[in-house]
Length: 178
Image (cartoon, one colour):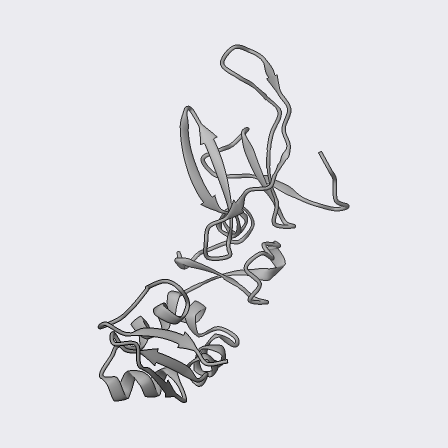
């Protein structure tokens, strides 16, 4: 198991003696014995992405498996939450930086409005796009917002099309104008 200088580990609630989270934002399994009594060596877990850019770790206990967001495991292990706030914010807006020094408990609204998110969202709406009708005609619009307003469409659905989350909206296809 690789070691980092001055790294602190704490048990993960509900998985005491099985898994721990570190103040550096890592998760590890602990040495243990399986049902047959065979020794299993603990290791730092790598996990993967949850599809939205957050690190996710799969934890096992008594035959049950659960996917957990790494930043939430670290926050629960190291950060007090006396007001029972529901979300964890990444202060540097880097979803993969799960060090406890980069995390804070917060409200949903605070998390949404934090940092440059609003500015980035507004800038994305200013990018020019093409709208393609069902008959194949391409129309240029200076922004997503302008296209949605003039065509009477929902801007969120237009944005989902542009980001590959939907194929079309009200019979139109959408693409970024390069």
